[in-house]
Image (cartoon, rainbow, N blue to C red; front, side, top):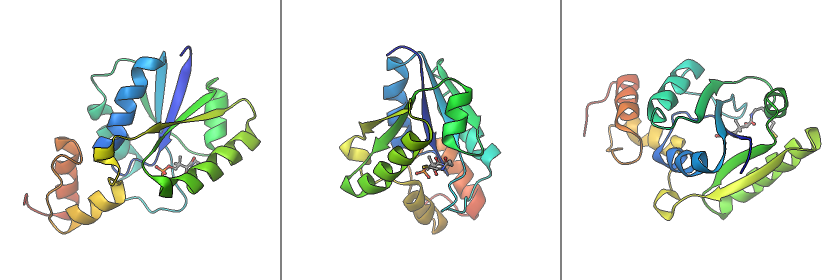
Length: 163
Ligand code: PNS
């Protein structure tokens, strides 16, 4: 696919599910922006700078991926950069209504913007940053769910030892 695409999210923190989508999307576009936004419905554990940092480390092997912190509307960010494709991972039917509402609102705000969905691998269909944080908070084993450096950051945040 020619041109650039945007993979937006709160990434609090990035999980192996996010990374799977990013790694599969990067080869099919020229440039993939991964933008760390504020989701007004969530209060983040990590600062935007921390989330960007974790994503940059996790995607360092992907030369056409650009990780940035973003604020304001997704459509403004996309318009400023001439981006016309938004890419979102879909885990299960339960994601659908939320994703449909966002895709339609974004289309309303920026008619040339298309939202494309990539199915996450079944192995990641249960995986979310929220669940990872909950398990990490109580010292549970999150290996295999997030990259090792993210798991360290979570343990530091919660002051929990490796279980
Ligand atoms: O990973 P998330 O929390 O599901 O991502 C949601 C996100 C950050 C993509 C969404 O909240 C968003 O687009 N925020 C930016 C502000 C915006 O444009 N809101 C209107 C969305 S229709």
